Length: 73
Image (cartoon, rainbow, N blue to C red; front, side, top):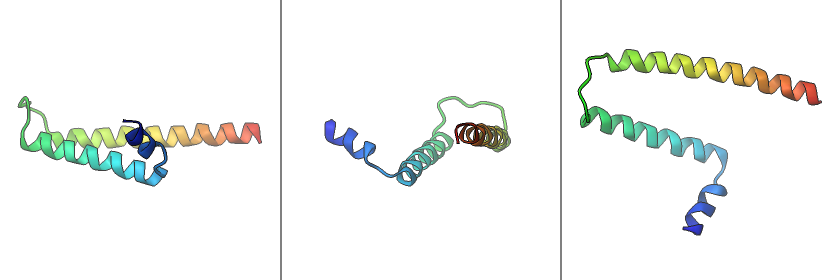
């Protein structure tokens, strides 16, 4: 177990991002193929709204990170 944790700790950031995106993509495909519950909503429209919220969150977090760096420097 320690070797597995060490592997993920030493992984570069771009590989961690790729790993997370691959797992989310695989989960999304699996859920689309074999849903646990059938819901009456448009999945792609809902995904679009989630991506809009994600983009907004990224912009706000980047702005606050930039402000923090500017305040310290």
